[in-house]
Length: 376
Figure 1 (cartoon, rainbow, N blue to C red):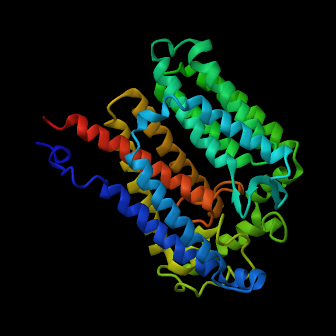
Figure 2: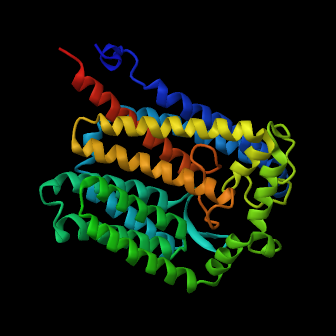
Figure 3: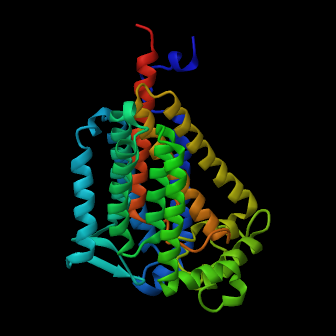
């Protein structure tokens, strides 16, 4: 009898997935405080400002994880189009209503009372559910251009255009990457996928060359030290943080770059603070936790009891993996700067709660598969 079959029904949570997630959330709370205390004291008069909010986000996220773990993932099938509609309405509301909040030159948030919500995160989840549903439904005609390829690109393109208007190039890239990957796994013709890569490359070139700040980011990515006083400033100080961390780091709270040198140290560049304060050892440990999460997601997808669960788990796991790789690549100077958070670690309620929901859905798919394999 396999380990999964012997697993007791009294332990409904996959601890191999849950433990690294909770560990990262705990590390995130500590590092958010360490990286934001000076900034919070200057702006809000309390060094605990971001710490308290992140702790609340973590608590809400854990509750959401538990709820999503116990909601059968098949429930999302009939909700596909309502979810897409809500995502589109929220993205439009950011652009055309007074609820939209602008910060750092981008309008990416909705203000709902005292809360701020980032609709692009929800749009990503809605797109994954849609792709899983559509790929399963059209499996028998997935090779047809007008059935297996075109509708998925149209839906992704509509959401991506709304996100690009904010502007948020990084989130749009993730949507495109997810759609391509899920179509590849679903069996869409490779010729369509490769030709779409060429078209997406041309579209990306257009958006980069027709936005001055994106072009400057690209130039600074190629040689950040030449632009260290402007567009390369973030990357230079991020690399300096990693460079001064050494093997074991300066110690939690003892980092230097977070003291008004490294912009957004508690959000986009929290990995740099980890590199400086926890050193290479902390970086490797963090990466290993992420590897375990992605590996578990792939295993859950492989063992899913149906195509919908398989595609849903693949999409959710890929979304986490892409965001992790892009954020780390940016902080290490391997990719141009993009405003993406690091899952479970960066400060931010929308990202943390929806990523915890992702883990809950993955756990439900895995638990459903184990129940289906359990002998009567």
